[in-house]
Amino acid sequence: MGPVSHPHPELSAPGPIPQGGLRIVPLGGLGEVGRNMTVFEHGGKLLIVDCGVLFPEDNQPGVDLILPDFDYIAGRLDDVEAIVLTHGHEDHIGGVPYLLRMRHDIPLIGSQLTLAFIEAKLREHRISPVTLSVREGQTEQLGPFGLEFVAVNHSIPDALAVMIRTAAGNVLHTGDFKMDQLPLDGRVTDLRAFARLGEEGVDLFMVDSTNAEVPGFTAHERNIGGVLDNVFAQAEGQIVVASFASHVHRVQQVLDAAALHERKVAFVGRSMVRNMGIAADLGYLRVPENTLIDVKKIDDYPPSDTVLMATGSQGEPMAALSRIANKDHRVAVGPGDTVIFASSLIPGNENSVFRVINGLMRLGAKVVHQGNAKVHVSGHASAGELLYCYNIVRPKNVMPVHGEIRHLVANGSLAVSTGVPPERVVLAEDGVVVDLVDGRARIAGAVPCGYVYVDGSSVGEITDAELKDRRILGEEGFISIFAVVDTSTGKVLTGPHIQARGMAEDDSVFDAILPDVTSALNEVVGRGNADLHQMQQAMRRVVGRWAAKRLRRSPMIIPTVVEA
Image 1 (spheres, rainbow, N blue to C red):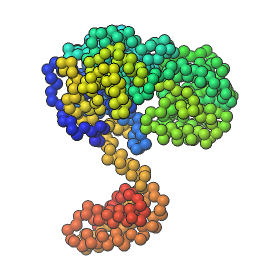
Image 2 (cartoon, helix red, strand yellow; image 1 turned 45 degrees about the vertical axis):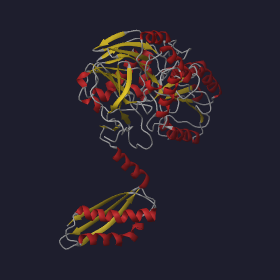
Image 3 (tube, rainbow, N blue to C red; image 1 turned 30 degrees about the vertical axis):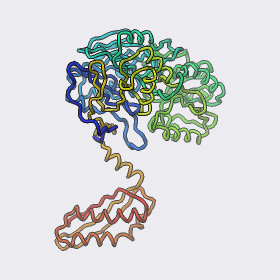
């Protein structure tokens, strides 16, 4: 386990929960965009809301996913009543398989589409979950937690907010939401329910912060339809559209535009095929007649008659669009083709996305993205919508969630502007423990909360120190030094030999330093009581100083001394 993701040296470990209190422990999603997970503790029982993943950045080479840190609950899994999933995006459900490996029968509670997405994912992990499908307006009692679900609008259908009622007070958690008044599926955020719950009394309002810095109101999803129509009308060759594999509303608009322009659509990417198949089967995705074809049959149609709906809008190296840009996919793009990035840029992914855009343009394709056309609208409420919510709910305490520090601070400021006292706005990060006692929410301490890296089949075995080694290997190169020493006579029998990898210089450049390495080795051996470690360190120091001075590099140096 690496260091904590958001250290709070001034906060000590929390004491016991005050009698009758409710403890809230965010294990992800506060201070970052992703791996959303919050633990609620009351009456000796735990309730978890969401369990998502964070996608790695360029400075985390080889990492596939980043999970919340489950250590806080690892010894209390039997106390977990359920995992409530607010919606089906990866940053809210992607960590579930890894948590269920620790206890298979933790009940999963969510809407029909959300559960269908996670069940398909769990089948790949060979886990059969215990599930409870819920709808807006439904109430459930799980141990000391009373739950009521509220419809909210987001960039995926069937999203829910949840009211958590306990003897310590009521918490309204929005999940991810916006207030689109003209949604494609007609399912608006239920502000009447928000108002009713506000009248009942919301002691703690946990509010999505992702767009809190953006003034005004988030644009309507249906605005994209006209933009896509124009792009499709002007496109000459094939069209490739990249989006999240779970963005059902965006895929719906692509299908509608394709049908209007008499083009066939093929889904590309395993997760896209799986998720859209589920959405269509459940009625959340309406597929126009004679529009959808298998990607294997794409060559049966002229490029001007086809649309490819692909994964990879964030520049993920193994996703379909990245492989197309690298000419490592059965689908090829070239002059006359149009590629549309129909998603926003997740912070940290900019370089990866621009690399893919440049690769596609190098192949001759026209690339349409958020920077040059309105082909994306956000799934999150902007500042104007958040102000509405605060005025409707009138919460006693506010805890901004889901976002980087700047988003949380902006959201907290919005709450204060509507009359919430500043001392009742709790700005917490991952691992910061918040207690709700006697109608007041206060920070009670912090628990360790590190990044847990998934690297191939290993979970949590890669540390930050090992990631640093990978970065050095990738950026500075690698030098190995080998020597054989007769410790009884104090003579160097073989070597030292130096080999380098990942460096521009030829190995012959190291000939100049060999006498100094031999001299340092002889000096250590000559003391008579030197061990192999001392000899290796002597060689490392000489080569390290020389590489820094002569090559301006700090490579990874691996010295090996064999005793004859």
